[in-house]
Image (tube, rainbow, N blue to C red; front, top):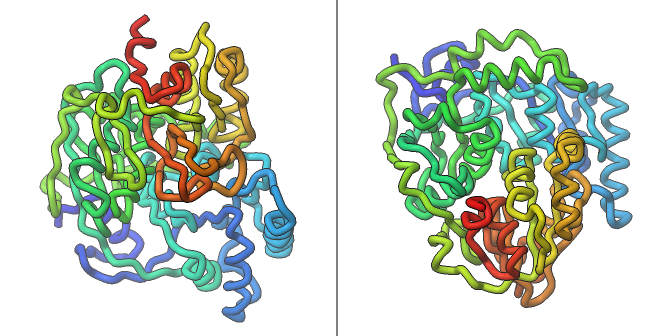
Length: 428
């Protein structure tokens, strides 16, 4: 039987060949929770179990409400910290690491061919490294903590065939916004969005993370980039990086992280990267996407550069290229995706360039992405954001508006005070 990556991963865990539509009960390789850990703890206690199934496979990262801005957030952190100590969780990261998904990849918890469950909707990002990253809710996570098992329906797979090359000034964010424009927010419901094609090898790990991160916005159960030489190079580099766990032998998982020739797909969607131009998702849905030229000149009150979608060194560097030697007209808030990213950006002079232009560099966290902390929006305010969602009230007041774009467009828009194309700045 020729299988897709999602089918191969679940077949391995089920101990038999599986097909789309089947329900399988499997044991995940790794599970992740963040500030919502305190709520999962309450649900876990309700199961009657006293000890989690495998402390070494639980990862906890505080990132959503960092720093804690009110007593409720502080208490949630305290409760989760106490539970981690009680259970002896070795993979606990308080407010010192960064956004959970970035930390999971940086610290070596995501490996090709593995099943990684996250109590966060953007856990689809793990597919960038050839894993099957599946978001689950808090109650499901509590059940996994207790039993070490979860049931999943084997998803169909939608193959996205990429050809051509990205034009200068156009990036992975523009590609995934284009997919939302063409397939819509329900275009891949309960499917694994598997990327393929001759253009794929040229995409960096950071770009792959952007694509897989926003697969969930298409309704997908997972986003997957098959393992290749770039994946191997990233894992080899991470294996020797300071602060990374000792990576287990990940080579056996590589075979599961590559689809079989002749694998069956529910649908094929082709994109010629050479035809892409900057895209913008307009309020208040992620698939309300248009060419940037259609909304250029729209006034913005602030810019948000960061999140698990576009807060990596590559993203910050691109924004710095746009603003180098210039002065912002609109506030730009920069949230690096992790402490490691922040350190590297500082050492490379990237943060210095952003600060010199007038940007404010914030804590490595989720920041204002979902409106809980940080540079949130008031009534009537407009934000140009490199994040992943623009729902009404997502970043603050229900009467505010969020436009989604690439990091380069965020930077250019803050230079001009209106939504602006970054390509002229990059050409110079």
